[in-house]
Image (cartoon, rainbow, N blue to C red; front, side, top):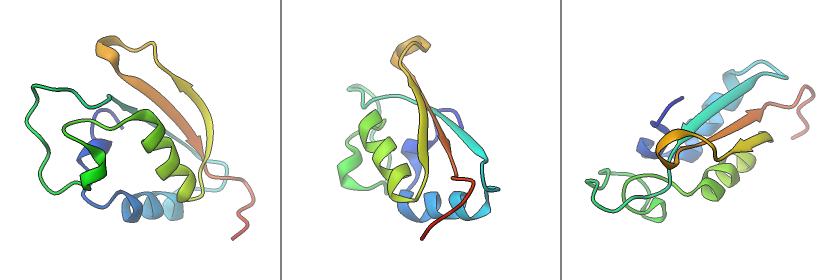
Length: 94
């Protein structure tokens, strides 16, 4: 996903659906950006997502809360974007 995660109005529910539908051991990549001033705020997103964008640590925590393991994080994308790669564990224990 590229620059869309911060638009999710119910990220917990969306993350749970992604987790459910991904094969065990499957990977998901999310490229997004931290909140920026000067951009129109996204309507309907959780208030803690702040403005337009999402802090990387908040995104990774939401993925972990859904059951994903964080595989890697990278900040070296253009325009201050970052990339988070997460995996659905091969053996899900819930």
